[in-house]
Each structure stands twice: as C-alpha cells, then as structure tokens.
Amino acid sequence: MTAPAELFGGKVAVITGASSGIGAGLARHAAQLGMRLVLADIAADRLREFAETLPGEVLPVATDVSDPAAVEALAEAAYARFGAVDMLVNNAGIMAFGWSWEIPAERWDAMLRVNIGGAVNGLRAFVPRMLEQGTRAWIANLSSVGGLLPSPLMAPYSVTKFGVLALTESLHYEMLMRQAPIQVSVITPGHVKSEIFTVRDAAELSPEVAGFQQWLQHDADSNGLTPEDHAERVFAQIAEGRYWVIPQPEAIDPALQPRTDMILSRATPQLQIPT
Image 1 (cartoon, helix red, strand yellow):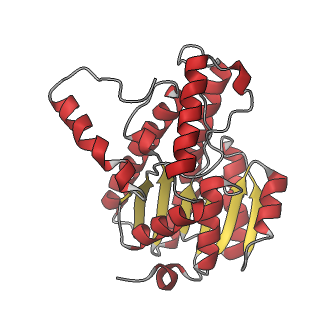
Image 2 (cartoon, rainbow, N blue to C red):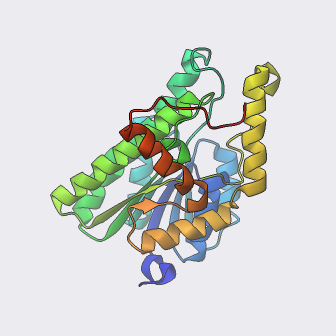
C-alpha cells in the first residue's frame, strides 16, 4: 500500500470551498503531504488570508462554483500556473434549515446551484483536461451522511447530497467505460466540527427547527471529527483506492442496514431523530 505522502507529494490538487471547515482541513492536510494547491472559495479575503498560512505552492482563486464561467476560469488559472491537475475535490456546499415548504425559493435555488451545480461545473471544467492529460488522477465529490440518510428540516441539503451521490457514481461508471486512469471517490462525512450548522438568523427559526439545528450543532461539537482528522482519513482512504470514502463509519454504518431493510420490506419510514 502506497503512503499518501508518497502517492500525492508534488501533485496538484484543486479544492473548492477551501477557506473554512472541511475544505480548509483538506487543504491543510494536502499541503502537509507536499501537494501543490489551487484553492477556490467565494469568500475572497478569507481565502487569501488562509492560503497565506499554508506551506508550499498555493494559488487562491476567488470562485463562485455556481457560475460555470467562474469554474472554467478556475481551471484555466490552475493549468496556467501548474500545467496539470492531478486531483479535484468538489467540496463547496451550503446549508438551509426549515420546513421544506417554507424554505424560500431563492434558498432552494442557491442550494441546488452550489451543492449540485458546483460539482457539475467542476466536472465540466476539469474532466476534459484531466482526460487529455492521460495521467493518473483523482476526483472526489463531497456528499454526506445526509446523502445516505435523508433528514427532515434540512430537505435541500438531503436532496443535494443525494444528488452528489448519484452524480459521483455515474462519473465512476463513465471513467470505467472510458478506461480512464482517473479514480473517482465519494466522500460521505458524518459530523465534522465546522460552521456548516451555523445559522445567522436563528431567531427567525420556529421552535422545532431551532431545536433541531441546536441538536445537530451540539452533536457535531461533541462527537464530530476535527477538519484535520477528517482530512487525514479522507486522503488515506483515497490513497487505498476506495470509491466509498467514509471517514467516520461509526456514525453512518449502524443506520445503513435498517434503512436497507426498510426499503426492501417496503416499510413506511419512521422518524429516528430527537424532536
């Protein structure tokens, strides 16, 4: 088995949503492995300041992943700087809480454009170039435990992470059909200590929604991996050649068999979270 540093050292990685949370953890660990980095995030100032803390060659590119032209510009910048991209991590994502019918249309649209559209735009911009390279490469898309186990009160997140799961599996099959030297992986984190559950206008949430959001935040703070621990596990599993990259199986596996049994038996889904 090849160690991640030996496999990835000197390679070029593009990571979206890289200025905080899971993305920042991935970027830090990639830098520690000796990778050269192209980091993308819509928060330009925060991205630039974060990039300055990392060792090695780092190119920060302010990018709105929901904009196909912006992601194409990201790819152009990456290839202009480094001449190749060996790893693409489509990580950028946002969250919304609320009853599915009450979440504003513009928030639904933003979730679809960023969480699914951002990954699609990443593939459209980078896959043709990576195929043309013809060299060994890696693509990893961030789904979630929410892409395996749908949840109430965060329907847009569940919908988009299920979408990323389907997109990634389709891409995997397509790379096999092309016999391309590109390994495809789907990353399905459990809880990671990050800002993903932070709500700016929490006072506007209903009591049920606010209680659910607070429970998720407490669980992440209490049981979540640090972004650094999460990243170390992600890169180790990608280096092992895994399609399913599940950094925290203890948070996911116990629910998978009951869900499978529920589907196979055609049972009506039952609520399994605190209310």
